[in-house]
Image (cartoon, rainbow, N blue to C red; front, side):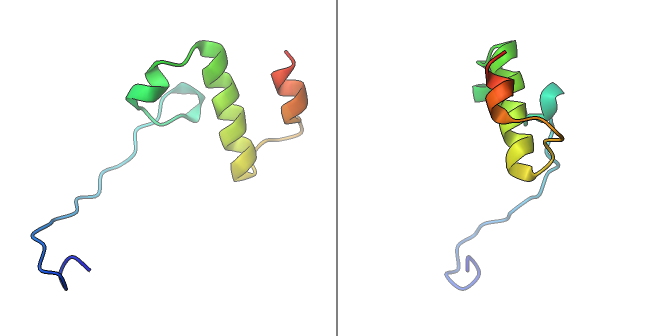
Length: 62
């Protein structure tokens, strides 16, 4: 599309760097507490279908 519109743009793919808890490094994630990071990892894994044999309800009640 950028070629069709003659927009001088070059897209450079870079690898994604992840932190502990399998979260992507970002300025927003740096603001999370350890507990919030653990919960975010559970949500991510659940949405991706890699949650194992636990439920979100029990994970957030700890």
